[in-house]
Length: 47
Image (tube, rainbow, N blue to C red):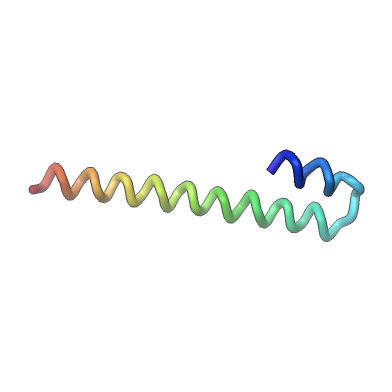
């Protein structure tokens, strides 16, 4: 996100809001990824 972040420092409110949404979305994606990995690990341990 660093490249788009530098572009959006023109200070437009919409730009900063979109950047926050992108960071939020990537955070959720990362959490989902971690959860899936944990679930897969648990499945392996149960079998």
